[in-house]
Length: 155
Picture 1 (spheres, rainbow, N blue to C red):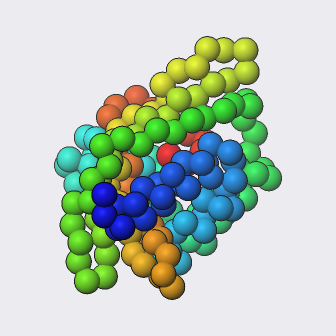
Picture 2 (cartoon, one colour; picture 1 turned 120 degrees about the horizontal axis):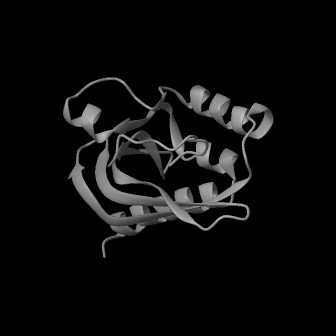
């Protein structure tokens, strides 16, 4: 395994652990200042339509989303576990690294069995900033058009 592959995998491990542990401030810091975070249905992705289930086009918008989750949103308590598989580096350019992976998010509500909440593919662009890999763009393409009642936490 190359050093680059190890660094990419370490970024995604940190990404998942930050979200699973609700360390949302850590999660935000994995993104570049100039970033895009988007969740979109497969149908809209394949048709290249801009409509997204969630879209934040700057780190500031991600910070606002996190503050909303932590301070103002009302929702039933839940635990989520995220799994990334089939991680591939698909392109390396002079200023970015593109990756593709599959993701699965299992959600557990209190007193209910765990269930698959989301699954799909992520298409990401990473950049190196001061020696650290950061996410410049993350597009999560959901396999289904049927979105559960609440998409609270990031994928």
